[in-house]
Length: 372
Image (cartoon, rainbow, N blue to C red; front, side, top):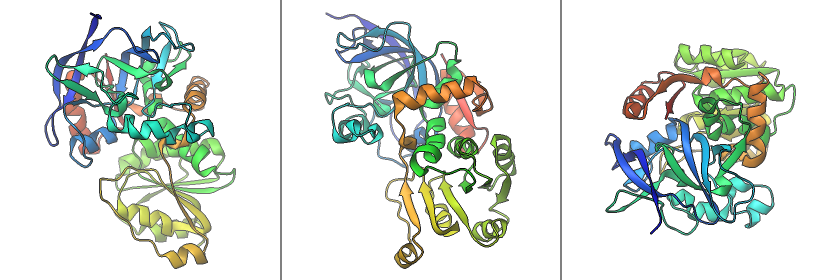
């Protein structure tokens, strides 16, 4: 009989219910193409809140969390690119490295991950955790709200060991999604004008991405003056409080009536997605980065789309190539070109996770980070 490892985790038991701190078990022996990671830190992300509040249909029991970093403690027999003691950031889209999307350089669209990890199970269709009586799934096959996680080897991305893991954890979701939306998805050119709607964890990293891309004008919009000030901290040149003024009119005024080259929606609300599309210039591009609740629809005038050649595109995980982009972003942080320190506004213990979600619902802070 194989040995097991104790896992202390925050377990989702159903929508609108607080997470329960439970003791679970996981095999100490990874499958051939898996690794066991001891978590050092996990960000508390708005996508977890979508599951917790019932915006997304989510099975129970399940360990939430998908934005984590830690240290490898065991590797499977067929894993050749990772070793015990490697520092890794976890990816919530493992790559099968065989489907048409993976081999063409689009691992975030991996067909096998879509059929398995997005259903919170592993490539073999099974979970890895147990409470002794029943299986417990891991959110997006990660489950970073536990102090250990078994993940596919392709979901553990090796990084340099001198990078602090609390900050590195955020590269596993918000940072990569935001920066990648600009650099990979939209491919913003130097000198462009950019609008970012929503100054949360993802939106602020869209701002960082726009700054890295050399945008000449970065307009941020939010209903919170505190969040708008954070936008300036991360690189915005102009702010719009959309609670006080009409967003589209304000953007046109700031751009000489033209509209922006690129608009990024980083909240996940239908009216802000529609506003972003309206705010881009003729031939401009609006990018949907925010995650919406199940069943949400938007209304777009198709004549405007064709007549003005406006583009509305989607962004999943910043269109990232995890094994390339994660280490690159960490390097940029270590060189002082990407700000991860300001992202961490609260360091908490696992037992405080429900309070972190309460703070999130109130719009306070940027990221609470669980430290194990």
